[in-house]
Length: 141
Image (cartoon, rainbow, N blue to C red; front, side, top):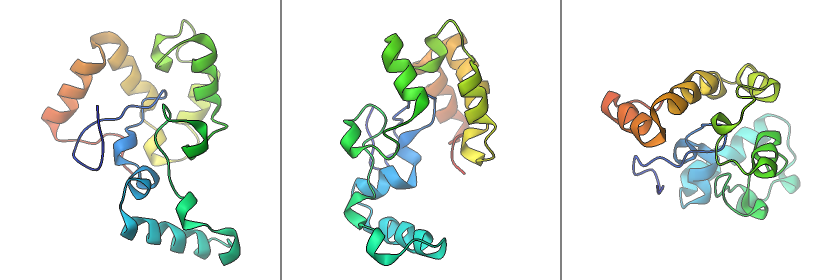
C-alpha cells in the first residue's frame, strides 16, 4: 500500500493510517502542511531555533527510525521484538500498552483497539476494503 494522500492506506503497527497523518504527508511533499505544523509548534511554546522544518517528516512505522516521527514508540518496539507486523497478531492483544495508547485522549488513537479487533476477525485487506466502501478515514482527527 502506498501514500501521498492518494486515499491509499499505509497501516501502522497500531492500526493508524499513516497516509492520513499530517506529519507523514508533510514529509512526503506537502510543504503547506509542514508550514502549518511549524506554526502549531511555535504556538505551543517551541522556540524557532528548535524547529527544523526538514525534520518534520515520517516514513511511517515501517520506515527507518531516522525518518520516523516517534522512533521510541513502545508499540512499534514491542511488535518488532516479537516479530509481528500488527499488534492484533499478538497473543496478548489488546495489551495494556495498546489500551493506554487508545485511551490517551487523542482522537485518532481512540478507535485503534476496536478497529484492530475487526482487522483480526476479517483480515487487513478486507477491513481496508470495508473502510474504503464507507468512504471513511476512521483514524483521522
